[in-house]
Length: 390
Ligand SMILES: Cc1ncc(COP(=O)(O)O)c(C=O)c1O
Image 1: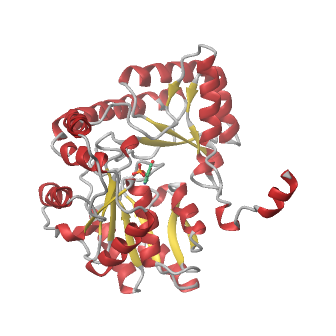
Image 2 (image 1 turned 30 degrees about the vertical axis):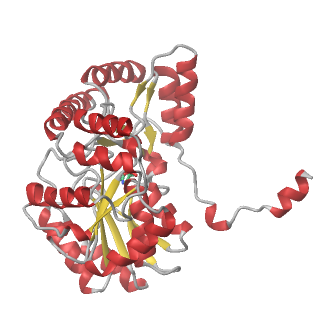
Image 3 (image 1 turned 45 degrees about the horizontal axis):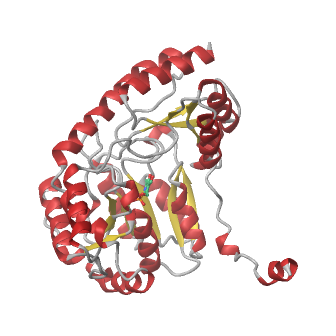
């Protein structure tokens, strides 16, 4: 019977996307905690702080009031309008609320953007190192992720030359970038972003900008690609700056030509986004004062790590411009950062992510540290790792 079922049900090839290796680290950390150990979690990219109080109160009131139904497919109009207003407040540009699509986190926005823009077989450029789901979602949808290797020389950013060189090999249909970036925490300067958008658009390459870490910029203010082009697809989320990972809510700013396609796709794929999360997100946008205090905590953590890591032997770290990540070269200590991260966890109870998740080619030389915890945890992590390496 089981054999018959096995023969009948074969997972599709497209579903064979790689799992995150960080899951192994998380599972090992959970085992240590079950045995009473205290793990410092620097492996998972999420804020330790809760959502803004305004969001939690709005959600509580919505629950008490009772019925939560489907909403308009592209989002509650007041939320779309409020997000549009945010572009005026933060970036000094006018965005038509009709161009805003509320999504189930930025994760759903990637699926919608790729489906709306690309045909199966299309080549889409993404940076290495980079957030793994970009390439995995593209593959699952039948597109071809084109991995552009970046280095510290360009602060891990794709340059127009790199993009056009790939395009000359075989035409690209899209390029996706993130600034601030995961895993490196580096950002693209405004002029470099402008040049990249112009290079892409001059060749008819669609530009997708993942702006999920906007708001978490320390070195210089992040610029939105929405200001540089009305054809760019902007993807953002309440997960990081607003500490709302579990609420699963994000948004896109769409070129006018894609609004109806995304509406049809989202209507079919999801009907609408969770009403409760939309109500909370609308209120979250009034919680900036609280979130700025959280951001100052990350800044303090960044300062502690940038001062402390070189002292314990991690000298090769790039400028950490934004987000809450730091990508450290550990080739001085090991040839395989996966094994290194495993040993570090077992012996120091500090959990970090091996670079192989973000870069199958060179990631074994790197680890990513997430500094979204408390300053006390940063000091303690430095002590524990320093003592271990001695
Ligand atoms: C660069 C980047 N983009 C997108 C996401 C997905 O976030 P969400 O779906 O919670 O909005 C993450 C999550 O870590 C990320 O690091």
